[in-house]
Image 1 (tube, rainbow, N blue to C red):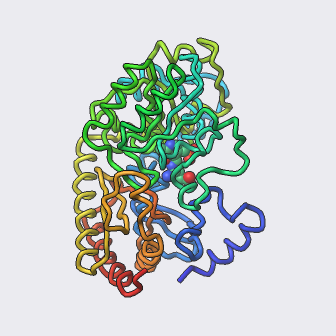
Image 2 (tube, rainbow, N blue to C red; image 1 turned 45 degrees about the vertical axis):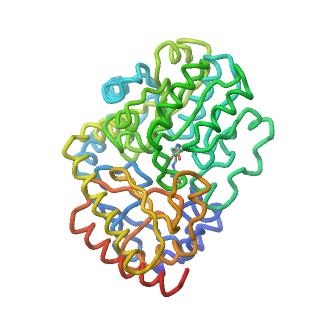
Length: 431
Ligand code: KE4
């Protein structure tokens, strides 16, 4: 049952904040019930305002790869806060972090910090247009690149969850240059390139999609995009806001060995503080103001408090961490599949490392169309049954679960036990 304090807070919140939340997917609308208002978090756990604890698989939608409130991070932030939180002037910390990012993601010869993944993606698109002199961008149905106008076309994440992937308020002109391809379908990309000769500035993609739920690139798909871009003078942009530092220290581009021209980063890069970045080839990025004419700016970009969190977050990306995350991810994925099988619930589990999505469908999920065959009612029953058992999942079928270095084998075992009971409940509800 929802905690009473959360119910009262949600009522208050809705009087002053649209839908009572500051980001739609948090509102539990897709799964029903009252969002839990969180009082504190530590390690792999959240504690709501009534003291109820949960094993957390949202992890702030990805940033907390080391878990919540690690002591080293909170100490570093306390120290920096006493030295100042934002100067509006260059500081050594942003140079340190930019060098660290370049060392981990070698394709990023230049890095520009911004404060959200939305800013990173919209800036990367502008730079691609400015550098090529072309206006059109290819995106993939079901991928999400933040809420900038040009990308709110058949977008994923919350836009998909609430069924308004094309938002009101986005003028037709803003999306006229946005072309839609299908994930894992190179033919759909080639058709757009043929139909728009020398007009496409960039192909932008989540190299492992997370915003229609986790959807992996089929063998050769990313390599195929690279070849199409090379043949047609198109920039390949990897939106690694979610996959960056998550799937490997160098992100999906390291994991799959495909080098994009531009990359967007977010989430883990800020360790839970508002940091995102875009960057890539020097000949492209050196056209960004003030080095060049393409304008982009931000009051809090590179602020020392956020840079401190980012530096701490990236320092801890050790091989041992990724080994543990991959092992726990595999155990959890197998446990979910087994729980569904034993309960007779159709389930497809897509996973890579510490990103997982159980789709409530018997159709293998390889793109938006197959993802949307999922039974979202069944997911809602599963979600609430897990929440009642102290496991906090992303409140949408079309999101990725995230693990952290703070999760333990015991947490995974507890989660699988809860999933066995929750799957039996789904089966009874024929949700
Ligand atoms: P933000 O503007 O929310 O920082 O980043 C936008 C963004 C861009 N690109 C990718 C690949 C992303 O996953 C995101 C944001 N991800 C969602 C979770 N699916 C954020 C959660 C939310 O909207 O509250």
